[in-house]
Image (cartoon, rainbow, N blue to C red; front, side):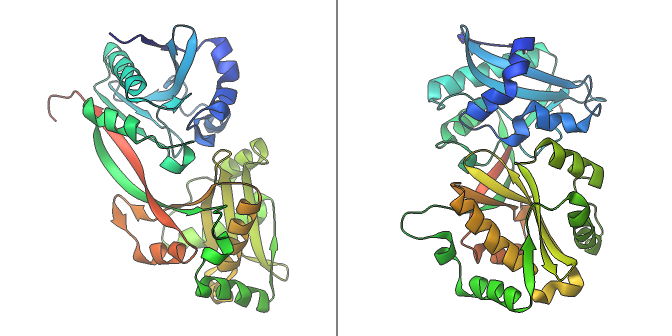
Length: 326
Protein backbone atom coordinates (compact mmCIF):
# COMPACT_ATOMS: atom_id res chain seq x y z
CA UNK A 1 0.00 0.00 0.00
CA UNK A 2 1.22 3.48 -0.84
CA UNK A 3 2.71 5.49 1.97
CA UNK A 4 1.52 8.66 0.24
CA UNK A 5 -1.72 10.51 0.91
CA UNK A 6 -3.72 12.87 -1.29
CA UNK A 7 -6.00 15.37 0.38
CA UNK A 8 -7.62 18.72 -0.28
CA UNK A 9 -5.20 21.59 0.26
CA UNK A 10 -5.52 23.32 3.62
CA UNK A 11 -5.68 27.10 3.91
CA UNK A 12 -1.98 27.02 4.74
CA UNK A 13 -1.29 24.90 1.65
CA UNK A 14 -3.27 27.26 -0.57
CA UNK A 15 -1.42 30.27 0.82
CA UNK A 16 1.97 28.82 -0.14
CA UNK A 17 0.82 26.97 -3.28
CA UNK A 18 2.42 29.33 -5.79
CA UNK A 19 5.68 29.45 -3.83
CA UNK A 20 5.77 25.63 -3.86
CA UNK A 21 5.22 25.62 -7.62
CA UNK A 22 8.18 27.99 -8.03
CA UNK A 23 10.36 25.72 -5.89
CA UNK A 24 9.25 22.50 -7.59
CA UNK A 25 10.93 20.15 -10.02
CA UNK A 26 8.60 20.80 -12.96
CA UNK A 27 6.05 23.48 -12.04
CA UNK A 28 5.15 26.29 -14.43
CA UNK A 29 3.26 29.56 -14.50
CA UNK A 30 0.20 27.58 -15.58
CA UNK A 31 0.17 25.59 -12.33
CA UNK A 32 -0.10 28.66 -10.13
CA UNK A 33 -3.38 29.50 -8.43
CA UNK A 34 -2.82 33.16 -9.23
CA UNK A 35 -2.72 32.33 -12.94
CA UNK A 36 -5.79 30.10 -12.81
CA UNK A 37 -7.65 32.83 -10.92
CA UNK A 38 -7.84 35.04 -14.01
CA UNK A 39 -10.80 32.89 -15.12
CA UNK A 40 -12.86 34.36 -12.31
CA UNK A 41 -15.90 32.21 -11.55
CA UNK A 42 -15.67 30.12 -14.73
CA UNK A 43 -14.52 27.02 -12.83
CA UNK A 44 -16.09 27.87 -9.49
CA UNK A 45 -17.28 24.73 -7.76
CA UNK A 46 -15.42 22.53 -10.23
CA UNK A 47 -11.82 23.11 -9.18
CA UNK A 48 -9.97 20.98 -6.63
CA UNK A 49 -6.53 21.79 -5.23
CA UNK A 50 -4.88 18.65 -3.87
CA UNK A 51 -1.66 17.91 -2.02
CA UNK A 52 0.37 14.69 -2.02
CA UNK A 53 2.13 14.01 1.27
CA UNK A 54 4.43 11.39 2.69
CA UNK A 55 3.94 11.86 6.38
CA UNK A 56 4.09 15.62 6.85
CA UNK A 57 6.30 16.23 3.81
CA UNK A 58 4.66 17.65 0.67
CA UNK A 59 5.67 15.54 -2.33
CA UNK A 60 3.43 16.96 -5.02
CA UNK A 61 0.51 19.18 -6.00
CA UNK A 62 -2.27 18.88 -8.54
CA UNK A 63 -5.15 21.14 -9.59
CA UNK A 64 -8.15 19.31 -11.05
CA UNK A 65 -11.48 20.45 -12.48
CA UNK A 66 -14.57 18.24 -12.41
CA UNK A 67 -16.69 18.62 -15.54
CA UNK A 68 -19.76 20.72 -14.81
CA UNK A 69 -22.08 18.48 -16.83
CA UNK A 70 -20.40 15.07 -16.71
CA UNK A 71 -19.59 14.72 -13.05
CA UNK A 72 -17.49 11.59 -13.58
CA UNK A 73 -15.09 13.43 -15.93
CA UNK A 74 -12.12 15.42 -14.62
CA UNK A 75 -9.07 17.05 -16.11
CA UNK A 76 -5.82 18.69 -15.25
CA UNK A 77 -5.14 21.09 -16.83
CA UNK A 78 -8.11 23.40 -17.02
CA UNK A 79 -7.94 26.93 -18.35
CA UNK A 80 -4.20 26.62 -19.03
CA UNK A 81 -1.78 24.86 -21.36
CA UNK A 82 -0.21 22.58 -18.76
CA UNK A 83 -1.48 20.71 -15.73
CA UNK A 84 -0.76 17.36 -14.14
CA UNK A 85 1.29 16.65 -11.06
CA UNK A 86 3.72 19.26 -9.80
CA UNK A 87 6.62 17.25 -8.43
CA UNK A 88 8.58 18.59 -5.49
CA UNK A 89 11.63 16.42 -6.20
CA UNK A 90 13.19 14.19 -8.86
CA UNK A 91 10.67 11.46 -9.77
CA UNK A 92 12.16 8.06 -9.01
CA UNK A 93 10.27 4.98 -10.13
CA UNK A 94 9.21 4.30 -6.54
CA UNK A 95 7.95 7.82 -5.86
CA UNK A 96 6.23 7.98 -9.26
CA UNK A 97 4.43 4.72 -8.55
CA UNK A 98 3.32 5.96 -5.13
CA UNK A 99 2.02 9.28 -6.49
CA UNK A 100 0.17 7.71 -9.42
CA UNK A 101 -1.42 4.93 -7.35
CA UNK A 102 -2.50 7.47 -4.74
CA UNK A 103 -3.99 9.67 -7.46
CA UNK A 104 -5.86 6.75 -9.02
CA UNK A 105 -7.33 5.73 -5.66
CA UNK A 106 -8.53 9.30 -5.08
CA UNK A 107 -10.03 9.53 -8.57
CA UNK A 108 -11.99 6.33 -8.12
CA UNK A 109 -13.09 7.26 -4.59
CA UNK A 110 -14.54 10.46 -6.06
CA UNK A 111 -16.55 8.51 -8.64
CA UNK A 112 -14.46 9.81 -11.54
CA UNK A 113 -14.39 7.43 -14.50
CA UNK A 114 -12.49 9.53 -17.01
CA UNK A 115 -9.43 11.61 -16.13
CA UNK A 116 -6.92 13.38 -18.38
CA UNK A 117 -3.88 15.55 -17.75
CA UNK A 118 -1.45 17.43 -19.96
CA UNK A 119 2.07 17.43 -18.59
CA UNK A 120 4.52 20.31 -19.09
CA UNK A 121 7.06 19.75 -21.84
CA UNK A 122 10.18 18.06 -20.55
CA UNK A 123 12.45 21.12 -20.73
CA UNK A 124 10.35 22.78 -18.01
CA UNK A 125 11.74 20.21 -15.56
CA UNK A 126 15.06 20.41 -13.79
CA UNK A 127 15.94 17.06 -15.40
CA UNK A 128 13.97 14.40 -17.26
CA UNK A 129 10.56 13.15 -16.15
CA UNK A 130 10.29 10.17 -18.49
CA UNK A 131 10.22 7.74 -15.57
CA UNK A 132 7.05 9.43 -14.32
CA UNK A 133 5.49 9.27 -17.81
CA UNK A 134 6.44 5.60 -18.13
CA UNK A 135 4.85 4.82 -14.79
CA UNK A 136 1.62 6.51 -15.87
CA UNK A 137 1.47 4.21 -18.90
CA UNK A 138 2.40 1.18 -16.84
CA UNK A 139 -0.44 1.88 -14.42
CA UNK A 140 -3.13 2.08 -17.08
CA UNK A 141 -3.03 5.61 -18.47
CA UNK A 142 -2.94 6.02 -22.24
CA UNK A 143 -1.14 8.66 -24.25
CA UNK A 144 -3.99 10.24 -26.24
CA UNK A 145 -2.10 13.19 -27.71
CA UNK A 146 1.57 13.75 -28.53
CA UNK A 147 1.97 17.11 -30.20
CA UNK A 148 5.34 18.69 -30.87
CA UNK A 149 6.44 21.87 -29.16
CA UNK A 150 9.43 23.55 -30.83
CA UNK A 151 12.12 24.72 -28.41
CA UNK A 152 15.53 26.36 -28.71
CA UNK A 153 18.37 25.52 -26.37
CA UNK A 154 19.99 28.59 -24.82
CA UNK A 155 23.34 29.15 -23.16
CA UNK A 156 24.97 26.28 -25.00
CA UNK A 157 28.67 26.51 -24.06
CA UNK A 158 29.69 25.54 -27.60
CA UNK A 159 27.53 27.95 -29.61
CA UNK A 160 25.49 31.07 -28.88
CA UNK A 161 21.83 31.11 -29.85
CA UNK A 162 22.58 33.69 -32.55
CA UNK A 163 25.27 31.47 -34.09
CA UNK A 164 22.87 28.50 -34.03
CA UNK A 165 20.42 30.29 -36.33
CA UNK A 166 20.56 29.75 -40.06
CA UNK A 167 22.17 32.48 -42.11
CA UNK A 168 18.80 33.25 -43.65
CA UNK A 169 17.21 33.83 -40.24
CA UNK A 170 19.92 36.32 -39.33
CA UNK A 171 19.63 37.99 -42.73
CA UNK A 172 15.87 38.45 -42.34
CA UNK A 173 16.46 40.26 -39.06
CA UNK A 174 18.98 42.56 -40.71
CA UNK A 175 16.48 43.17 -43.51
CA UNK A 176 13.90 44.26 -40.95
CA UNK A 177 16.32 46.83 -39.55
CA UNK A 178 17.13 48.08 -43.06
CA UNK A 179 13.40 48.44 -43.63
CA UNK A 180 13.32 50.87 -40.74
CA UNK A 181 11.72 48.66 -38.10
CA UNK A 182 12.50 49.06 -34.42
CA UNK A 183 11.32 47.09 -31.39
CA UNK A 184 9.30 48.51 -28.53
CA UNK A 185 9.50 46.27 -25.48
CA UNK A 186 6.87 45.78 -22.79
CA UNK A 187 4.09 47.59 -24.58
CA UNK A 188 0.53 47.61 -23.26
CA UNK A 189 -1.91 44.99 -24.52
CA UNK A 190 -3.92 47.69 -26.33
CA UNK A 191 -0.96 48.21 -28.69
CA UNK A 192 -0.33 44.50 -29.22
CA UNK A 193 -3.85 43.10 -29.53
CA UNK A 194 -4.95 44.62 -32.90
CA UNK A 195 -2.00 42.84 -34.58
CA UNK A 196 -3.06 39.60 -32.89
CA UNK A 197 -6.64 40.00 -34.10
CA UNK A 198 -5.44 40.67 -37.64
CA UNK A 199 -3.42 37.44 -37.63
CA UNK A 200 -6.24 35.27 -36.27
CA UNK A 201 -8.78 36.84 -38.61
CA UNK A 202 -6.74 35.50 -41.51
CA UNK A 203 -7.50 31.97 -40.26
CA UNK A 204 -11.08 32.71 -39.29
CA UNK A 205 -10.43 32.05 -35.59
CA UNK A 206 -10.09 34.00 -32.34
CA UNK A 207 -7.13 34.23 -29.94
CA UNK A 208 -7.18 32.03 -26.85
CA UNK A 209 -7.50 35.14 -24.68
CA UNK A 210 -9.83 38.07 -25.10
CA UNK A 211 -8.25 41.49 -24.86
CA UNK A 212 -9.59 41.87 -21.31
CA UNK A 213 -8.20 38.50 -20.26
CA UNK A 214 -4.76 39.28 -21.68
CA UNK A 215 -4.82 42.70 -20.01
CA UNK A 216 -5.64 41.03 -16.70
CA UNK A 217 -2.78 38.54 -17.05
CA UNK A 218 -0.40 41.31 -18.06
CA UNK A 219 -1.39 43.31 -14.99
CA UNK A 220 -1.20 40.28 -12.68
CA UNK A 221 2.16 39.09 -14.03
CA UNK A 222 4.06 42.16 -15.17
CA UNK A 223 7.38 40.27 -15.25
CA UNK A 224 6.06 36.98 -16.66
CA UNK A 225 3.48 38.03 -19.29
CA UNK A 226 5.00 40.60 -21.63
CA UNK A 227 4.19 42.04 -25.07
CA UNK A 228 6.73 43.36 -27.56
CA UNK A 229 6.09 44.89 -30.98
CA UNK A 230 8.03 45.80 -34.12
CA UNK A 231 7.26 49.36 -35.18
CA UNK A 232 7.31 51.05 -38.57
CA UNK A 233 7.35 54.64 -37.45
CA UNK A 234 4.30 54.93 -35.20
CA UNK A 235 2.61 51.80 -36.62
CA UNK A 236 2.92 48.43 -34.83
CA UNK A 237 3.32 45.82 -37.60
CA UNK A 238 4.33 42.64 -35.73
CA UNK A 239 4.18 41.38 -32.18
CA UNK A 240 5.16 38.67 -29.76
CA UNK A 241 3.61 37.90 -26.37
CA UNK A 242 5.83 35.97 -23.98
CA UNK A 243 4.83 33.85 -21.00
CA UNK A 244 7.75 32.98 -18.71
CA UNK A 245 7.07 29.39 -17.62
CA UNK A 246 9.66 29.17 -14.84
CA UNK A 247 13.30 30.04 -14.28
CA UNK A 248 14.35 27.58 -17.00
CA UNK A 249 11.95 28.36 -19.85
CA UNK A 250 10.65 31.48 -21.55
CA UNK A 251 8.02 31.03 -24.23
CA UNK A 252 6.19 32.84 -26.99
CA UNK A 253 2.48 32.30 -26.46
CA UNK A 254 1.57 34.47 -29.45
CA UNK A 255 3.33 35.42 -32.70
CA UNK A 256 1.49 37.87 -34.93
CA UNK A 257 1.96 40.35 -37.75
CA UNK A 258 -0.09 42.58 -40.02
CA UNK A 259 -0.37 40.68 -43.29
CA UNK A 260 0.06 43.86 -45.34
CA UNK A 261 3.52 44.39 -43.81
CA UNK A 262 4.71 40.78 -43.71
CA UNK A 263 7.55 41.38 -46.19
CA UNK A 264 9.19 43.86 -43.81
CA UNK A 265 10.23 40.87 -41.64
CA UNK A 266 9.08 42.33 -38.35
CA UNK A 267 8.38 38.89 -36.93
CA UNK A 268 11.89 37.71 -37.84
CA UNK A 269 13.34 40.67 -35.96
CA UNK A 270 11.18 39.98 -32.90
CA UNK A 271 12.19 36.30 -32.76
CA UNK A 272 15.87 37.17 -33.12
CA UNK A 273 15.52 39.69 -30.32
CA UNK A 274 13.50 37.32 -28.10
CA UNK A 275 16.09 34.56 -28.28
CA UNK A 276 18.94 36.98 -27.64
CA UNK A 277 17.17 38.48 -24.61
CA UNK A 278 16.24 35.07 -23.22
CA UNK A 279 19.80 33.80 -23.45
CA UNK A 280 21.21 36.93 -21.81
CA UNK A 281 18.57 36.60 -19.04
CA UNK A 282 19.87 33.13 -18.15
CA UNK A 283 17.06 30.91 -19.43
CA UNK A 284 17.94 27.40 -20.54
CA UNK A 285 15.29 27.10 -23.26
CA UNK A 286 12.94 29.18 -25.35
CA UNK A 287 9.64 27.53 -26.25
CA UNK A 288 8.03 28.57 -29.53
CA UNK A 289 4.91 26.55 -28.74
CA UNK A 290 3.34 23.74 -30.70
CA UNK A 291 4.09 23.21 -34.38
CA UNK A 292 1.39 20.56 -34.66
CA UNK A 293 -2.34 20.47 -34.01
CA UNK A 294 -4.08 17.24 -33.01
CA UNK A 295 -0.90 15.42 -34.04
CA UNK A 296 -0.94 16.94 -37.54
CA UNK A 297 2.17 18.88 -38.59
CA UNK A 298 2.36 22.36 -40.08
CA UNK A 299 5.45 22.14 -42.29
CA UNK A 300 5.79 25.90 -42.77
CA UNK A 301 5.68 26.53 -39.03
CA UNK A 302 8.31 23.84 -38.44
CA UNK A 303 10.58 25.36 -41.09
CA UNK A 304 10.30 28.87 -39.62
CA UNK A 305 11.08 27.74 -36.07
CA UNK A 306 13.83 25.34 -37.10
CA UNK A 307 15.61 28.20 -38.89
CA UNK A 308 16.22 29.62 -35.41
CA UNK A 309 17.70 26.37 -34.11
CA UNK A 310 14.49 24.88 -32.70
CA UNK A 311 14.01 21.16 -32.15
CA UNK A 312 10.91 19.26 -31.16
CA UNK A 313 9.81 17.87 -27.81
CA UNK A 314 6.57 16.10 -26.98
CA UNK A 315 3.69 17.89 -25.33
CA UNK A 316 1.74 14.90 -24.09
CA UNK A 317 -1.75 14.34 -22.76
CA UNK A 318 -2.49 11.20 -20.71
CA UNK A 319 -5.89 9.71 -20.05
CA UNK A 320 -7.24 7.08 -17.67
CA UNK A 321 -10.73 5.75 -18.25
CA UNK A 322 -12.87 3.27 -16.37
CA UNK A 323 -15.85 3.60 -18.64
CA UNK A 324 -17.37 0.34 -19.80
CA UNK A 325 -17.94 1.67 -23.33
CA UNK A 326 -14.21 2.10 -23.91
